[in-house]
Amino acid sequence: MYALIDCNNFFVSCERLFDPQLEGMPVGVLSNNDGCVIARSEELKALGVAMGMPAHKIPIAQRRKLVLKSSNYALYGDLSGRVQRVLAQCVPALEPYSIDECFLDLRGMSGDLESLGRDLVKRVEREVGLPVSLGIAPTRTLAKLANHQAKRMPGRPQVCIWPDATASALDQHLRQLSVKDVWGIGARLALQLSDLKVDSAADLRDAPESWLRKRFSVVVARTARELKGTPCIKAQDLESPRRSILCSRSFGRLLNDPQQLSEALRHHCQRAGEKLRRDDMLAGAVGVFLRTSHHHPGPQQHYPLWTTLPFPSADTVRLNRQAQQLLERLWRPGYAYQKMGVMLSELSPRRHSQPSLLDGCEPIRQEALMQAWDAIRQRYGREALTLGVQQQQSAWRMNSRHRSARYTTRWDELPSVRSG
Amino acid sequence: MAISHFATTTPSRDRSSFSVGEQRGASGFPSPADDYQEAPLDLNRYLIPRPASTFFMRVSGNTLNNVGFHDGDLLIVDRSQKALPGQWLVAVVNGELALYRLEGQGRRWWLRGGDARQACLPLEGDNDYRLWGLVCHVIHDCRRPG
Image (tube, rainbow over the protein chains, first blue to last red):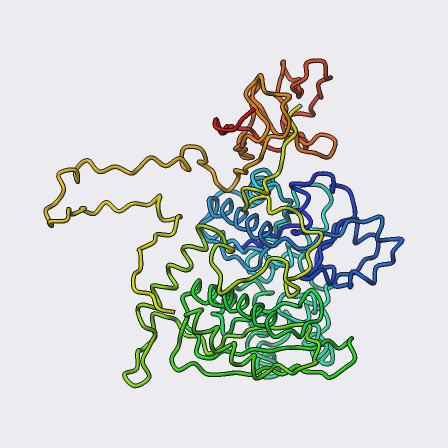
């Protein structure tokens, strides 16, 4: 048996945990740079504000009635980790799937599923304080659908259990469910399937596997088998190793000043380097892009430039040096840039790296330098050590005017409790 | 960038785990203290046995000075523990987080604030949605004035 646990309206729930005034109000969380709505409370959904809607398109009269927050990933990330820690104490194996979803492997767990599921949900809600819903089924694909169903249940705890893939109630459900709502079947694939008379989840389940494999892909065939109740999508399929790393951000306003661009690039290189080392990888190539805005008249530029490193590296200083050279080549006077990013590619695990006699490899000194670098930033904060000066108020920094405090990760931003 | 010396650094999360292997003195002889080696006292384990459900908060206001909560004090709040009568908790009252003491008699439970003249708030059982977490410790910086 597998379970999928999902935090309801995760970002909004995180905001409400430390700001109870938001309870019952229409609340939305905005994407990086305060662009679009990326999370909505039930009350906001009821007002008809769509997912992905640009904040400035919400009518002013409506905007007064609701609360829009800038995203606070420091807070969300911390709470997501807490949810996983609580679950890890209860089940033998855990596969985090996204910031707010987690698959649980329940094989070998004794006791009845109903009370197990209710316990898990109650425990997370009590210990971390976030509402969650849970689906349990013989396969991950079915567990995902069961979770979807649990979310629609009134009252708490929201738990939906389909212990038997052949049960008639489940069959009924799959007949009514459009194939595009099945995990891993996107809108495009659903259209192609629909052309061949595969419209519902039950149609996909009953289609011949060999035909699906030939006509579509092995993944679609496996999905069909999962709907029948045979687990065949593995944990490894979910966490495919990273093939590239991207660090990019829109600027707070349009920019052309080479010094500010260079500062922003140093910031991105720092982050990219840290991601790389956290996964214990080396990068073989670096790319940089500078993007102008579609909405702004004037010359447009979008393309990236790439360069190959002389040898695979995870050294922020080296990555930055290469990236800065690319930036010099990309930059054009008079262009109004809106976004910049650094990409790392040709990633290889550090432990498999084979030092080549001719090409050389990362000097031990640089590895040690980066270890010290990461340790200092982890211990004293990210502002303690940076590549060159990076000002807090720079124009390239993102807009996050409505961000709540980083309640769980900063001593000077802890929630305050009124005494008496 | 020329760097000639590196200090070894240990990520902070590893400090709680220690190795039981022998520690050699500078001369290479085993230290006579080896057999008595124990883990250093870890304040994290002492104060925060359940990190996933433990949150830090700051006291605001001086109303509860007489019971030991001062403005700016650090609270260690655990959501996983059930409160008993007489214990302090963080509760959600009027849309904000506030300190209250849990009191009870028989099956009736209520919250009492620091001000004795204030009316107490009756609770709907021990799962009342207003209970945020149990205050386990308060850390007061004795060097601060006030």
